[in-house]
Length: 494
Image (tube, rainbow, N blue to C red; front, side, top):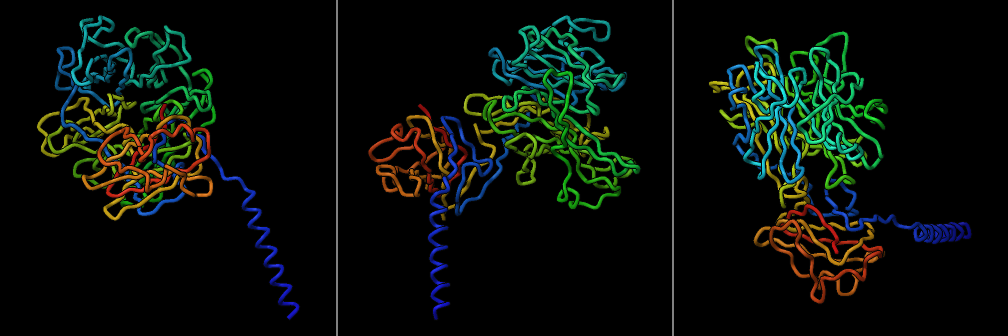
């Protein structure tokens, strides 16, 4: 009996000790400041119930915004391949597109611009000779295999625009610089190994270095096993590159989709555009260009469908990427459309008001040169897809409802806004909790006014206030209770 009492006493002491130990362990606090917080991952979710995370796809318009329609571009052997770029700068949407002549192998980079992002003007620039004439809009000559234009914040004004692409026939990587995106000069020839893709570079404020996302082949003695991956590199000067890492490749799920006639996986990754979102300090978004080849075709050595679509992934460090839902983010177009065989996401999305516009290059000709079923002639060009601001991923609840609770956060601001979409009968209520998960006076669910509608910045209100400035700098949690609702993001604002 005495032994039993001793065991109980030890158990009680241990329980008291562990409770006190837990009480002494501080909860991690996330400083969200006044930055926008997306729900692409679990950073801002401590607990949840009744929630489904959904990858949302933009609406793809079946219209060609730009194609090879000028005299120097027109012929049965000319078309627009996929290595094209778009930027919003100086109040204009600027577009650089790849122009290829399959008859003689000549390949040019041409320039167009727009005020509204839909109607593009091709000005005669007199920069590059095409078939004996300077009367065209080309800005880089026949040796350059496409473009990936970006603005370098660390460069002097006369070199602020940069682009890099494989040159022909040397196979070297040529990087050009320009003050305006029209007058280009050779900047460097960095040696990086495999570069036969659209090579994406930007200045990464997170690590204060340049990063590049390019290609790496995995090659084997049996070439039928070879496959493409996405590779990441870093640099201080755009010349010397290090810290090489494979960041995206066919995984076990990809490989299990089909038994292919070869040992190659049914899909590999031809390239990827990667960018920071919602700003230069945000998370890394990857639009991976998936190349599909998994069944034998009559009279062709190339496996079908030999086509591209675009997949979505995200990362907090730019190295480890999480795939979302394994469905196309940008899908192939309908029969007879200009993107029925190939679709390729241009770097990077353009913000237009409260929308994100994703420009894409498309063709009804697959990678092996075969026209799509029902196609009478080759079509190619640039189109667009449109999504709500921050709309990549949402937390969804059905009519039965659900909720999330954030970890402890510290914020800076006077009011709280949600990016959300409800049905007519849907709702969201926001409750603010203290460190012990207790609702704060005046900010309880009972005080909260229902949020109903569709807005990228719907203000959160309670019966007595919408002002949360008294809690600014304090450690609190948000409890968001939803019904028939899609929640995309939250942000504290002044």
